[in-house]
Amino acid sequence: MTQTTDWLKVESLDLEAQGVAHSAEGKVVFIDGALPGELVQATISRRKNNWEQGTLAAIKKESSLRVTPGCPHFGLHAGACGGCKMQHLHPTAQVAVKQRVVEDNLWHLGKVKPEVLLRPIEGPAWGYRYRARFSVRYVAKKGVVLIGFHERKSRYVADMQVCRVVPPVVSDLLMPLRELISSMAERDRLPQIELAMGDEVIALVLRHLNPLPEGDIALLREFAARHGVQWWLQPKGPDTVKLLDEGGPQLAYALPEFGIRMPFKPTDFTQVNPQINASLVGRALRLLAVQPDERVIDWFCGLGNFTLPLATQAREVLGIEGSETLVQRAFENARANGLAHKTSFVARNLFEMTPELLALDGTADRWLIDPPREGAFALAKAVADIAENPALAPGWTPPRRIVYVSCNPATLARDAGLLVNVAGYRCTAASAVNMFPHTAHVESIAVFDR
Image 1 (spheres, rainbow, N blue to C red):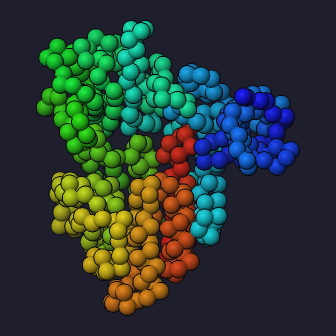
Image 2 (image 1 turned 60 degrees about the vertical axis):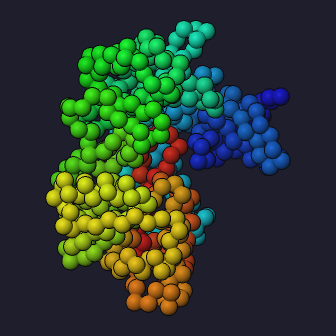
Image 3 (image 1 turned 135 degrees about the vertical axis):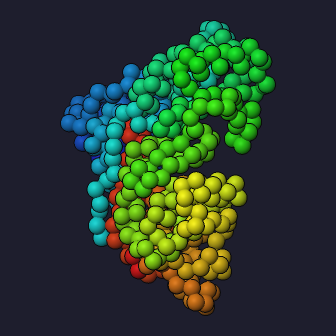
């Protein structure tokens, strides 16, 4: 049973971009669609002993930072697209909120306070998203195909005709793609289309549960020729992806500041936002301040997004990743960029690091750490364990500086707590990185000196 609250003063935003208020009884109320400073009423849909959750019902006092959403599919109503959560908040304020999230997590979870807060890294608010995973659903009763993100708080696919966060050329493909899938014999067995854009290529990965008949293949080729895209087919997991037709430009992105060109497959992990990625790599290397005679380790190196730029500055760079396949791909990218002589790569389970394994990789002057959402706890703990008991790794010395790039402020704070409070580092700088405008996703970068 739903109920509308009395007027509530919204105090802040949480990590899901919900307004946070307190009822007269002191209970926390999370309000979807409300902004800090507003006086609102909420329709409560969920209750627990210590908190309630609801949706914005009315505004008595509106925030000066509230703006009209830029996309017609954004909203709180049934059927609204769930791909974005913050379009109603001015983009500049979104960045300020994310900066505060980084600070709060570092202090409350890690008891770490950066000595300097750097200006957040930000870029275009629209058309920035070069990676996306669109769900596909054939609605037999209506005879239509839906392609897009899921509806807000729902497993259903939103009825999207445009998308403002992908480049306009991709947004313009949504309706033609719906017509294409509708015309295919296997339309009810095609659950997903993944977008991967490079500097010269728009790649579309079609997930298909059954082998495609020749008629469907012909339709894909006709669409590719008309719209200038590459089709890749994925019958099972990501490793099964295959280019439909060879030839044409290679899927790749450039890091012009370092003269690097990075080929990749559409199912590889690459950053969603190429403008922010280029800025992030540049800032990370400036903060790391590598000298020509130094050795650097790039932990969670992936395809070499940081390794190869580092190799243009350091004497030697070791890239470490958990997959033999990724290590091989990173080496191929280093060779293609003429940097094989300055790089080496090792496959290692980075979630099971120990002081002994740390010593195997040798001493380095500086580290770059760029983990997934799970963070780098085992790595930070190994460093902390050696700091408490140097006999665990005789002769090994910790890096003088660490630059940590994070996609999860909570795991960054946890690992920072170990580095600062146990391993003897200082957190000398930190900032938010607005990789995903209009979403609640927070990326960040932090510097640790010893």
